[in-house]
Length: 290
Ligand SMILES: CC(C)(COP(=O)(O)OP(=O)(O)OC[C@H]1O[C@@H](n2cnc3c(N)ncnc32)[C@H](O)[C@@H]1OP(=O)(O)O)[C@@H](O)C(=O)NCCC(=O)NCCS
Image (cartoon, rainbow, N blue to C red; front, side, top):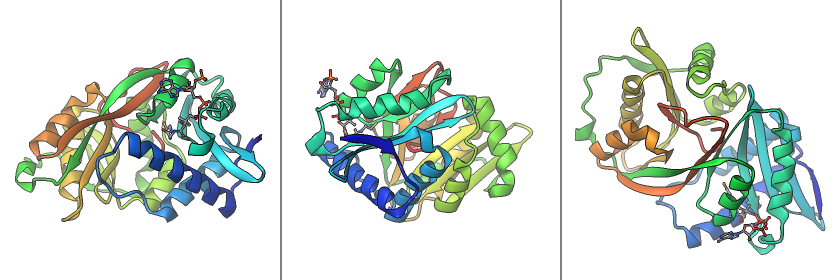
């Protein structure tokens, strides 16, 4: 078996996607997830290639006889190391492949005082993250059909669609709330998610990405702004689609309360794993970019 850097090409993207599909499919059989639509293949493949371009030295695959059997993809953003994907093919699990891959990607994060990742409920993953010095914050999920009657909002804080012209605002909010901007990841999210919502008023600022029923990422300078954005995002989930909000630690009770008000079901799943930092708040991390 060899470890090599991920290449920015269709073949590697497909190989990583196939193996992630097999690894997470296997996991879902032992730890069922709330029903929800997976991201479209074109989006998943584009994300792998995006990371291969932005952080080639942080993205590694394990290969045996020409077949990719494991991958660990990480990125660095302004002093934060982020693990975006970690998976080993089911038939190769438990043989130390994950440990070797994680060591390689963690080396890319050396020098970053802070680290973040959204962890699955896999016990083998939690073992690795604790060994790497990350603190595990158990996470909640909200899912179900939005009860629109519960969405009444005074609307005193205007929310409007955003675009690449809001980049400065997005970066400012991220630096305040999580200590690092998302940088080029906004290009990806703007290009692939359904919409970006912006709140920017004298009371504070914030933003939220929504894609189908999923609230992908939300950051704001106050709970009031965050709550306004979350309600707006949930109001915009298309009829007939299930809403889904993931990776809510106890710090995000403001979001849990809104979800319960609008009839979503609360569950627990996975962890937000952090090193050198407390959970950002108010903040809903993106599983793929944190
Ligand atoms: C998480 C994952 C990448 C680990 O890869 P792997 O190649 O199986 O990992 P390794 O063989 O290097 O190590 C697994 C370790 O976890 C331990 N482990 C496995 N299951 C365990 C359990 N139920 N309880 C405690 N420890 C467990 C193993 O004993 C091993 O420890 P060791 O290093 O002391 O031997 C792999 O299991 C996977 O793809 N899971 C599904 C996808 C997933 O959840 N990815 C993580 C996303 S955050």
